[in-house]
Image (cartoon, rainbow, N blue to C red):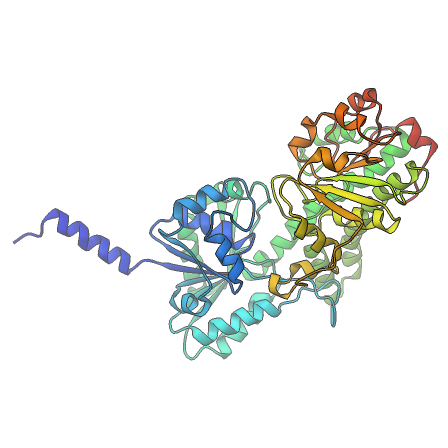
Length: 499
């Protein structure tokens, strides 16, 4: 007797569930969380579990208040969570059950030992690899998702193979190219998906398995397969070249101020060259984020280790210009206020490294605030997405501490008493001598600056570190305005700053 259609459907569904591909992502951070959420959304037949040893972080991913802010992320997570997307602290269990393991753990810059200040610390990667080897009972594809130095895959491969107990591991490099603030759209419509693997039959089979997942929603011509080393180096190269463009236009901004040129006009003229284009040509107080500086320092270290000091020095200069730009900004603030900000209230509008994110890793605001605090300023900070706890933590921590897992960071950093954090821009600026705009949040352009001016000390200063303000409108109100790379206010010409 023929099986009824409804029964056949049930059998088919049962078989499908039995053969469901299982993905485990180690690390529930800015990369792992959004990437896995989008894979779960686009591939409903795949079970995706994001694991982390941080109970608080996993609890946040399972709550109504996600641990990171990213436009569109909450909607994606809510569509999939509990269906085929799960967040768990049962790390070993889900590693053991997975077919494909993404590793998205921290790779902080070393602060001591060989390569301190430049090389990546692979402690967390090695720990993850050893755990995978210990608990695996079936063949696995292990995918590098963290930004790692070239040849990391080879090191991880050695750890896994020497502890394999007969299990076959294939290592792939699948670097992320996400821009915070647009990460979900970047995942929905990536410029490219890069997959690096071994040039062996097994390696090519692993590449195909990962390619098939992405091909569910990414056009085939945007999925690029390379060898492992090319994939690893491509991520460092992409970030270094993007950072280089920012440092290039920031170097020009200093020259513009010295000559009376307008950096916005220069950038626009340059961008019309089809070989150059308009992206990453906005002069600012400097670049931030978790990747640019770290990846360039890593690139410098790799160059030095391979006997390429001239190449290393070339990339070092990108970092030097970025540091110079932040120092130059602070010096402008101090010099214009009669060469001292001691005891003066300076309002900081924006602490995140860019708009539409709450991420403060390597944000220029940290160095600007520390520079002003060094001259005894009193600082009042407002950012719509960054908490007071995070700001105080950032201003108290040593450099690169931010890139360690939260449970290894200082638990109760000493609060900086000269810093107050508010949840209102008008409160932050009330009674201030000057305002520094350090993040390009759209809401800052819509504030009532006449009201702000009326409640400030006089003369009242605005230092636009993102070139988002209508300078002439502010000057008509009465502000003395400094905008990076723009013709200087007469007041600033009389009080030059030396970086």
